[in-house]
Image (cartoon, rainbow, N blue to C red; front, side, top):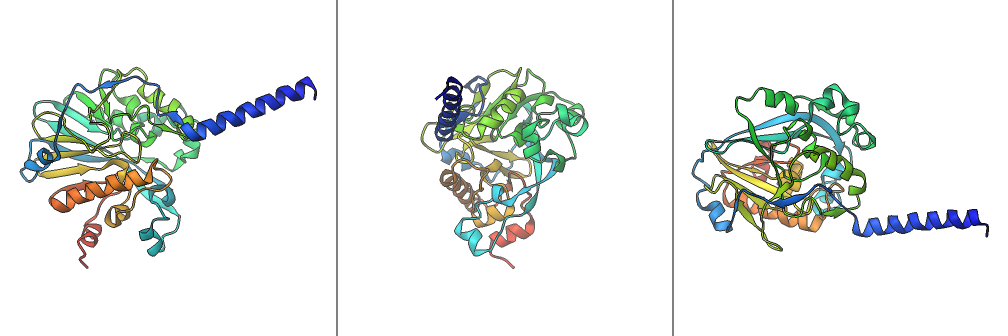
Length: 327
């Protein structure tokens, strides 16, 4: 064997071993530093529901940042018995990219997730989705309705923090428009959860977080379901819902018009919520995701006044009636 062939064989073998290792252990979601959150106190689930039926001080709004279409097989586990029984097949599914506005009378203005950045609509090649990942995600199908920069410019108070449900690109795409001194909060272990897909997305996540302080991780207990009283007054809660990602987090707000649950991508679609079916290929651990989804559904079944905000679709009156078994 010639020296050149031995060298080539070594390179190929090395790449194969690297790929095999990557497939098994994955890469972390981000190399950005993380630290325990400065906000929040761990509470029991009983504390979460204690005053749930009483209106709270939070002013709340859901904003549609963009419309999009993605494969249903990513949004919904089409191999789940419920999906098979319904005869669901893969197709392009219309969805929305949301962010949620939380106004606390004392702590100020916060957002849950970040929508999309100004550059995505105006200078797409320089946006977070300007490269290969944007091509794979069909950047051209994203129709921006309200970007984060424009929304921030309309506010009469400064943004005090960003509460992330998780670090997937469609939930952090608006971060480049967020001032660098604004703290970013996420679930326990979210930045260093390992997945194969992070080989393609970690650099984008790092770019989105660049210049921001360390991600502040909710102090959820390990290996158990956890809830955190974010402001310490029972008005806004972070809920540990692992599965979609390692540190996926849902949020529950006691608003002036009643409780609102933001489930993040624990459930993307109205059909998935109604039928209790977890996401498909877009999720990391479907078993854990389904368990988290069922926990959230149990919470809303026990407290039917809760308004639900899904990851990427509206829960309509029709789908809510279907959930109750009404015609």
